[in-house]
Length: 192
Image (cartoon, rainbow, N blue to C red; front, side, top):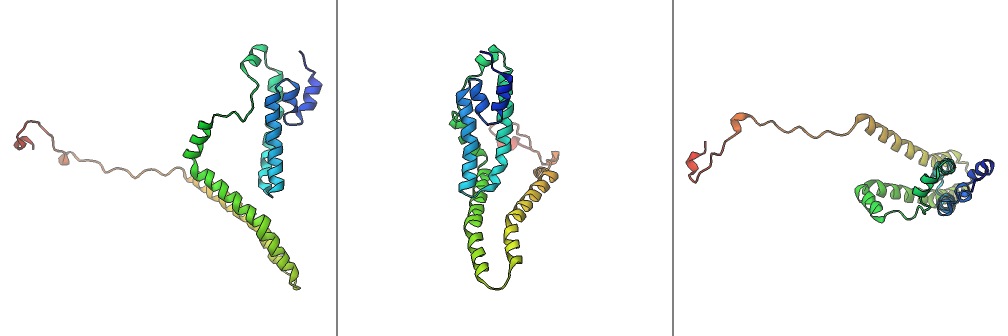
């Protein structure tokens, strides 16, 4: 069934709706679930840095709609309508095992950020408000800590990339005089 290009364009603006309009219901539901889950986590847990994922998801879903629209019938048969959640669990496990430091670092950063923004910053704000002396400069410094931390991490990563990978220490070259040839035999006197 031929779908309207105008309606496809309109539905493409909502992540997942374009895919659903074109008959890929599971794929569209996956896009919607991912998009609104990120919104809910960022809003409910106070993890505003996660909001940078929303434009990525939106653009991917937008252009995926048009890729589906322009597929031939043969390509549509080769591209099944599946949920994104049916990812092979062994792939996830191997990724986490290979990159456990990165995954762990992300979780530690998110946990520290949540504690800072949801617990420490509001408590310190109330303490500063209760003090009659105007300490706006302390409040500004406290609000700048996450930005400062992220800037330091970005600079560190940039320096590591510029420096390149660490090369292994060169192995000492063996000289031919240190080499003793084994000539075989049962008598050890044959060895020079």
